[in-house]
Amino acid sequence: MNEAKVTAIVEAVKGVLNVLNCSVPVGVSNRHVHLSQADMEVLFGEGHELEFMKELKQPGQYAAKETVTLEGPKGKLERVRILGPIRPSTQIEISISDGFKLGVSAPVRPSGKLEGSPGIRLVGPQGHVDLPAGVIVAHRHIHMHTTDAKRMGIEDGMSVCVKSSGPRAVMFENVTCRVSEKYALELHLDMDEANAGGIRNGDLFEILR
Image (cartoon, rainbow, N blue to C red; front, side, top):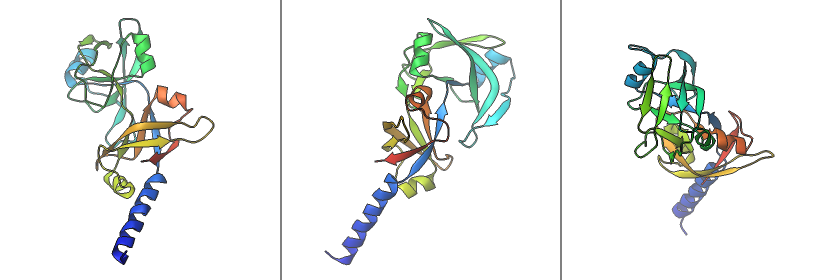
């Protein structure tokens, strides 16, 4: 075996080891709503603009002061936070446990994949909106800046496993990597997933391929 081939093999092994030793901080995502402009004006009044409350880790994303109530066939959830900025379509992200309380069977989907999802009623201080679709359980995923993805040898859309540590250590498979210059490195899990492993915001997961 010539020197070039040996070097290539060594570099490939290093790449795998780098991935196996990479960690990612977790952001636990509670139930929340992304609103379209039209639906926001029905809920909060014509010309209303979201009022900033705090920044989220993803650049340009923030939690607004406004909340709404979700009303399903079996129950309701009050004071559900709205996240900004405004989106083209309204999307509600809940956990499976939330779905039991509401009486809604929400599919596990990537963000934006709303076709065929159930609808729900949103109630605000100025009115209500009956959505025909838009309720999902967000598929667990990792946001990655392009520099992080390159360092780890990961491409956009790649599926990885992640593993936590501690007394309730868990491993999650089928975690989709989303790569963009607009993203910051962060693993997103919902409340059900976090509670299963005693996970809190900022905890570190090891990324496995």
